[in-house]
Image 1 (cartoon, rainbow, N blue to C red):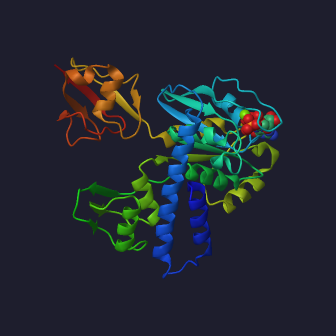
Image 2: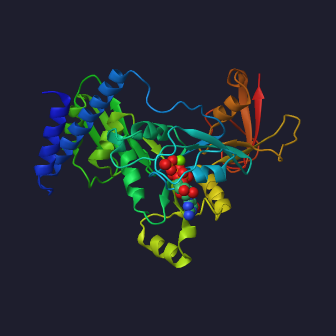
Image 3: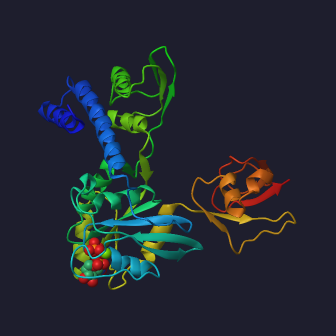
Length: 365
Ligand SMILES: Nc1nc2c(ncn2[C@@H]2O[C@H](COP(=O)(O)OP(=O)(O)OP(=O)(O)O)[C@@H](O)[C@H]2O)c(=O)[nH]1
Ligand SMILES: [Mg+2]
């Protein structure tokens, strides 16, 4: 049996099985098998096509934001509003056929924004340019879902297509550690009460992934799909923001009515009329979770005029990389004043995580 037949068989099996307490284990296991076969097939296809997936675009700036939406929702119009770019805009679908980059400057950060072709249902399984578009989203720091005011429910479709390609939107990586061992079977240490899956299902799913010896430490109440995410090792976790475009076509009452019905918060804008663009820029900036780091020279003056903008979670090592290529080799220690340390001037090493508005001195050899 080839891969497609195996996949079909499991899908049918899942479909046939009624979901209840008794079948939970069975279904969880089938889902794990299905996920593994699908990624095998994915690998096979990429090998065959021989080409790299995605569009050729060089990352630049402090962070990269991608515009994901159905055709004609106004992605290109919005890119042109947010940045210096001039992406083609037209009233027919699939106007944009390639990635178009632009740069948005906000609060001292240079943010790369990528306009992309529209995607449709089935994009992740190869419809249109879908796969290539979704591949670009994998390397983004933020996904901007663009929806039309008349079709806001498209947000779910877009997130589902991303999910299928291994992108987890607004989720944190599961707090689970799997330490492989050569032998000794699988042991499970659950540090929280597990309500969504049993220990035996954890063990069986590990077996699907050919792991027969390991220590699994579970620090979060995960389900079988999250465990599969950990095992597959190629999931990416990206935050998102939803933008509702074309609000100029409706009245304010309509917009707030729509927003009440939606499970997600969104930013209403009119890309064409230029409504609420400044607020959107601010939201994008906030969602990217930037840190402003003020560098202090060894002589004692601090440059409060031009902070270095780095991504949230950045360490001293990340700052070193930004200052100079060989900085890390010359590094002795750093001193920090601000929220990330207990006292001002505290000495820290390369792995220290910085916080917004920290003042930093790097002492080199
Ligand atoms: N009324 C109104 N029309 C808009 C707005 N933004 C875009 N449009 C129009 O919607 C149509 C599609 O705009 P595009 O920016 O080309 O849409 P797109 O999402 O890039 O489309 P594709 O590249 O085909 O996926 C054009 O006719 C735009 O003028 C808006 O805020 N309000
Ligand atoms: Mg376009």
